Image (cartoon, rainbow, N blue to C red; front, side, top):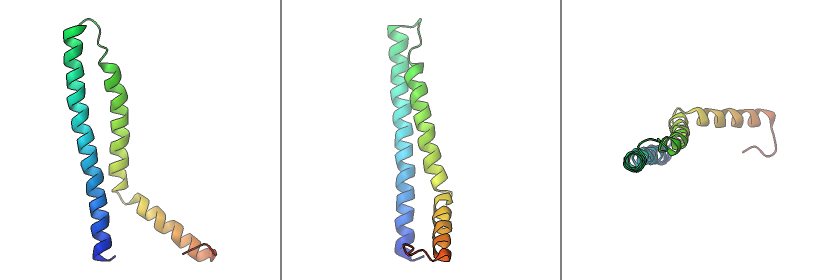
Length: 94
């Protein structure tokens, strides 16, 4: 691979990781605030757990996408598909 291509991939991966860390920081801050509001307004009922749980699922999915895409799995799948297309001699193959 050329240096430019490697730099583009590295920037994209770093941007995805940074986006996940921002998402994580906002998750922690907002849910801490919701917890504080819940404890002050209605200490007998823990409603803050509902948005926390839903958001945690979304955050986990975001994390899996970011860190599994960095495993190279997607690139290997693309290379495998290109190899199959080239070996079949498909007219639409690059």
